[in-house]
Image 1: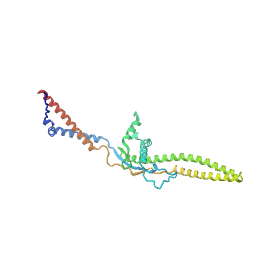
Image 2: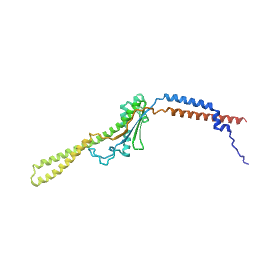
Image 3: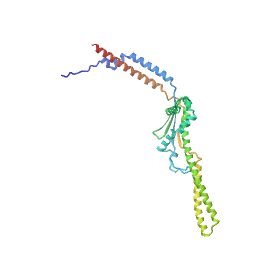
Image 4: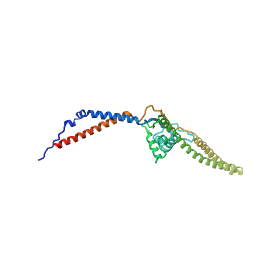
Length: 295
């Protein structure tokens, strides 16, 4: 015959309200102690200040233009998703990171000793922690820089945005310089050919001269075309175009971004109370268990 097992619960052990009232002083001491200790610890943590730059990529990043920089009449001011991704990649590139590392001597600024085993890795980890860029829901790019020096955080954030524009212009000038070199070679060859036809006209008579003159006209037109492209490429290799459009420049932060003392105190206090409750629950369970064993 099966025996029915009925679970019996002790009301004084499982009634949460009675449990709290019974151990109120212990909870009070634990909560106050946790709040005071966490507040003191938060005061010992050096604060970080955050500055933010908001910018859009311009259509110059992906727009195909003439060598003189002339764009179609329907060209939009802002670039699309493709331009945003390119801008994000440039901001996160080693060119920008090396530039910041050298200009602001980040090894010394972050307190990385020369005897560090992997100094470059440590610097990279700190830069990943303190310098971040992200794409917003509006298609813009935000650059956030945190630092213990509020003014330096502001300067670095603005400098990153400016450096991205410089990198795009350097890339454009480098590409244009290669084009100038190629066109210059073609122009020199075509100019020599036209000069050859001009010299031959003095030695030819009649129909041969007319035929040579017609060829000369065609080759001269082509020479003028190459010359125009050479002038355009030369202009493009020297000009500066806007590749980033800054909406909000970084400003010096008035309040610290980290640590949030109130959050630290609240989380620490709640965690201490929960831990105290678990300890008391276990202690009462062990006590009840021992009491049952003695019966």
